[in-house]
Image (cartoon, rainbow over all chains, first blue to last red; front, side, top):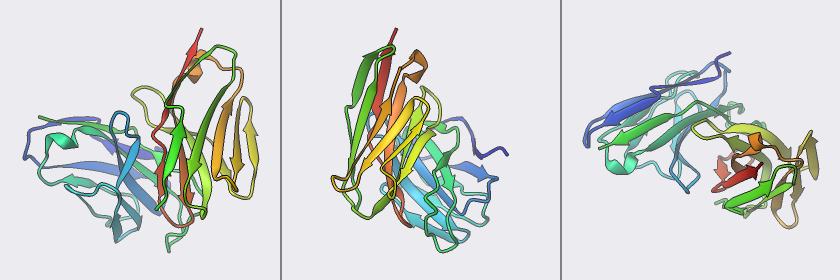
Length: 118
Length: 111
């Protein structure tokens, strides 16, 4: 099992550019999520999904879009990059029931994408 | 919504000493509390977790205690080693909701 795979590892964008951060997991996890990590601010939830076709906003969703067409993939799109979106982005997944109920299962994180917007 | 506080923000200990990190949560319905270790430039990795029906859990040099009445849980690391140096995050999950993370504690183990 590869676990949670994120690409790319590093990315530099100019203000106004768009891009997609890829996330895939091979553990058949129902729940997938995106976090951003900024110095001194811990991990903040951007968007999450409890199953294919279902997405919802987290704590800091503005400027980001997501979709969940398959159980395995959960891409994060930056619509028009801004310097404030410079951060490290982590994708994470865990087991959930099809209704989104928790199994008290931990999050499994990908290796992260370090994004710089100039 | 849930709010998780974590103290201290930085902690320095001598090699071989114990380290304790404490987290408090606000939502009494939260029922699952994992701890993650993040080394520099790496992803957070689960080191131990505890469910609300358990008061304490141990795994070798690491232990977690939970006080549901006071709504706090703590990470205890005994016989610390230099490789324990990292940032530690606590988190709380309310059944069916999202994880909420504490801001992290930077632990330095001095040789």
